Image (cartoon, rainbow, N blue to C red; front, side, top):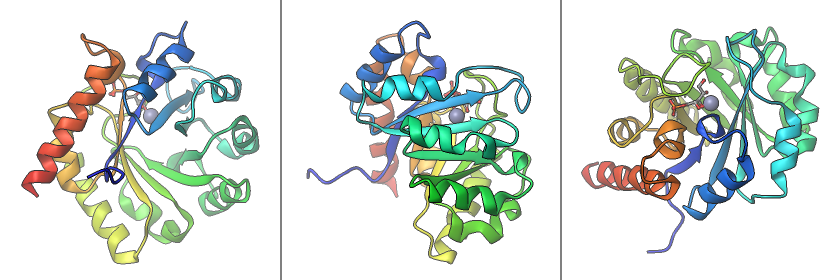
Length: 229
Ligand code: DX5
Ligand code: ZN
């Protein structure tokens, strides 16, 4: 069967060689990843600083993957337009960083970009209950944001399952994405819980046999999960 896979893979540049993002983007796409995940950090919302819209713009010429921009910044409304113009396909903001979340989500869509919202591990799903019609993607953080290579928080499996139920009940087509500690072991669990997009940094760019092996390992783990559903 050659139909598009149900579960999509989004390698995170946070674990790539910062001196060679173009090469990393190309390798991820050649390995079959559908999305490329950009972790934008401001040193305020999270205790780390990475890069901004210029990096997204520069890579747009090097990849036709869906650019999945994860904003871990305070007052993200200040930068939505800039990231949209830089070539983002999806812009995700943190519910914890937005006083007027619904307005920010509408602003993202007005820019012609898919609107995502993310929740830190401790934030309840009720924070987004009334904005479900405004989202195209729900990102459940499975670690506390800020760094790559952290351990998956097992309690998040229950949250993913609840999020799946919430979206299904609302008739929402929004993609359910997970981010943090996703590897060959955790993938079958999150897919069974209902995840649809897998963000993976260290298990892809830090794979000892290279990016292709990293993506293939995740893809195999997805198949394993789907066969057992
Ligand atoms: C964490 C970032 C993640 C990070 C995941 O704050 O949002 O996207 O790159 O890294 P791994 O897959 O190594 O846990
Ligand atoms: Zn991320």
